[in-house]
Image (cartoon, rainbow, N blue to C red):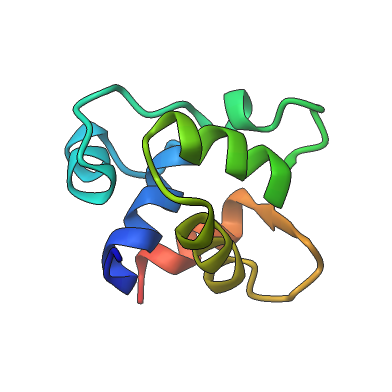
Length: 92
């Protein structure tokens, strides 16, 4: 299982907040991370857990780690992650 730092790094990488080096650390992959806008496939300006699930799986991250990351980053527990929530998570 990935560490909390790695899980958050994966989530932040998926949002386009961190670069590919964080992606490699978080998911064991050198693939370029998708941007926040690419993950937000429905164009709402937020990322839902299913949207993060698709992006995370493409990065090679397990479903349980993606769920954990989502819960850590969704600070207000509204079921959506804003870009601001991702940025706040990088400051922890």
